[in-house]
Length: 65
Image (cartoon, rainbow, N blue to C red; front, side, top):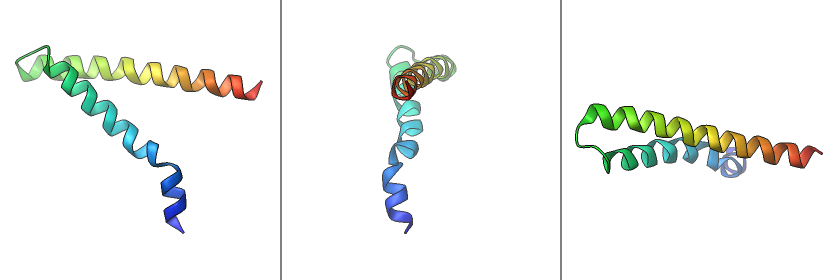
């Protein structure tokens, strides 16, 4: 019974991992040392998460009204 519920919400499991990995790879292409990589990855990941939440909220509002 847990299969269909998990399969329906698979993006909730994959999305955080995807945000972390994309942020780290993007930051690693710009810097050579670990400290700037992690700092920029955190900033970039926060901006990406904020953007996705804003788009999700906008879609939610459009769907409600």
